[in-house]
Image (tube, rainbow, N blue to C red; front, top):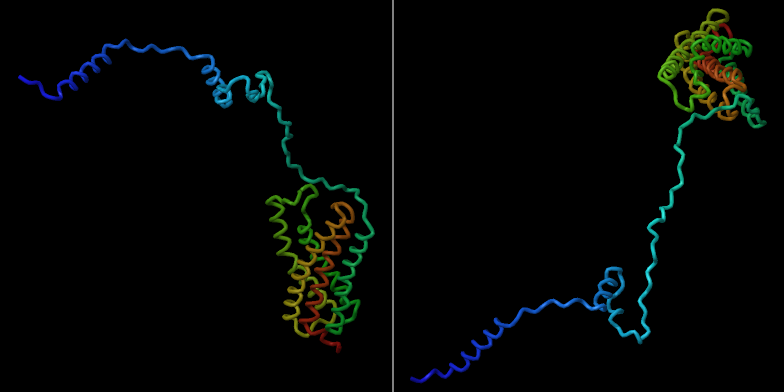
Length: 261
């Protein structure tokens, strides 16, 4: 019986497989110092290739900074808590020359309104002056509610202050118009058209009230406090109300009934 031609190669393969299976297991060898140094350098962030180079090449691994574990973190500076405080206005702040000039200029505006009212209807100057005074005096009763903002309010009003301001803003024009119209109709010659004269006085008093509030606030800001010249600011504001009512009364009423222009 003849063996196949490939039998020697099969026998060689079986012998090689048996030699591999019968070989003793390879034991793990401990790492050399070089490998340990490379791993330690890798863990510290240093390239491991520098430790594998020969020592006589003069290549040194970069030194890492030493961190002191006992070093405390820099403490941040303490920031004081912000406490919102209302601005305090000094009651004895001096009145500058510019403030006096602005006050005087503002006081001349109602006087100009008195003169303009006498020219509109052909009424006498002292009569229009008395009508302005009458409107301002009657308007001062509700008009005092327009100036109730306290000195330490800091620009923020309470609900009662806002309500009082609204009441003063509504009641001041009709009372000022009633004072001017009533004095003109009862104490003097009266107007040619009484109904239109009252409506004109009412409209002029409304415009004067708005202008008086604006001027009062502007003058208060110029001085820088609420105590100095407080009475003068109020009189100037009420002068705007009375002169506005007189202008409207003379313009819409057409002048006195018994006097020609």
